[in-house]
Image 1 (spheres, rainbow, N blue to C red):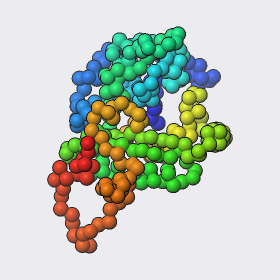
Image 2: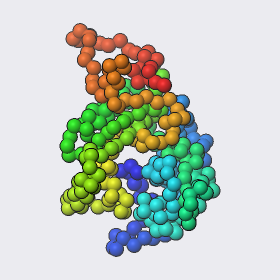
Image 3: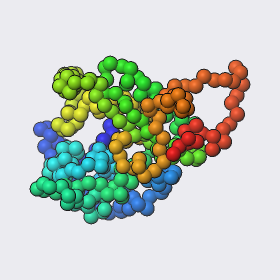
Image 4: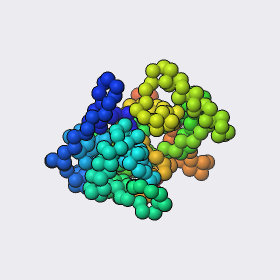
Length: 299
């Protein structure tokens, strides 16, 4: 999930953090499938702070579905992810099932209810809550993001490296106003030995706790070494939307691999700023829409 967690996700008593019931209302909810499409060939949805899904802020459900990914999960997984009790998680899943965002996976040979996202759920997971950006602003944000990728890989502090970055969505279109800068990221351990990596992860978690960081649940605590890399990559930019590189949406739409950099037969390394070839003091001619360096080699 992202760093922004709306307060209506769950209300906790300050004393003892006792859980209180979650009031859910379906009144005035809009079907996200009918939301305005402004994000290019993917048909990405746009949501805002007033949009609600299954009684929750649409951003909460979007972030939940993003975090769950294309895997299967049960009521306990949702309860741990949201920091709510199991009955409340079960009620939320019931509503998501009824609305068509998730489905029961009958192929899982296990007791209990195991679910996964539907195509409708995939669309919601990719929904944007940010205002449209000018292409110039989006390209600056993407450039800064790629520089942070280099920082993660070069800085020994981070325990995970960025092995792949894939750009997709409206940045690969000719539009001059785009939605989020959608990137899928693959993170891999920097330490080759699994036991040594686990020890480093555990030490990082202990350090985070010692300096006052508090985790909402055990899942967030376990994945803190990975999450801190994603936090740095995002750097609180509302323009950058980070997804997992394993997301099946990448096989259904145009995309472009930005990292690793192209080989000697490809284009220049997009994580570096190109050296200007213009004479000092001379303004650049405005680019035509089809000349954007991000979308012209997509596919």
